[in-house]
Image (cartoon, rainbow, N blue to C red; front, side, top):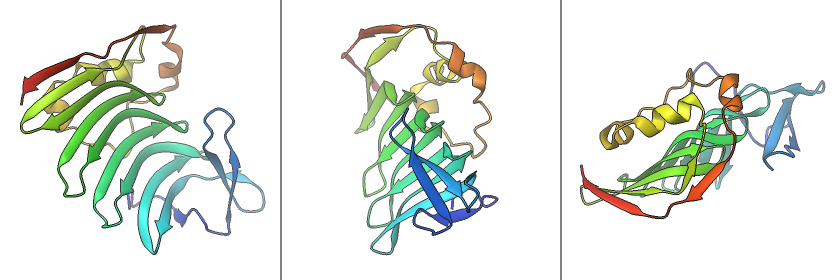
Length: 181
């Protein structure tokens, strides 16, 4: 369970209906006969094991998503907004060791740091101009702050204003930077 205050349903609950979000290819969830947009938490099971759980607001992924290995160990935790990955994403090995931390903006991985043997390998994938305040803040965090980043259930930093700050693509940068942690 991500947030104990949410209504929690299985993705296969018969009260839940969904349609494809034409902007993202993901689903928009409704509840009941009246097709009211669902707000709460959904989970997905495979062979009786929860493999994914995520928050939904007004029918779309909004908040935190957790994905699990079949063993039940955390595989990835990420922030979402409007059915798009938006914020920080952490990926773990099945043994529980942190593998990477990424800053993601509307499904685009802006910065990735991989953790190997007490060294951080940073890879900036794309440079963009006029990024939203949330993403600029996340890009300003030190390696240690990113590694220690804790996920806020309320996603208080997100705002509609964040949608209005982008005006173009930059260039691809595939260079690694290596630092001790």
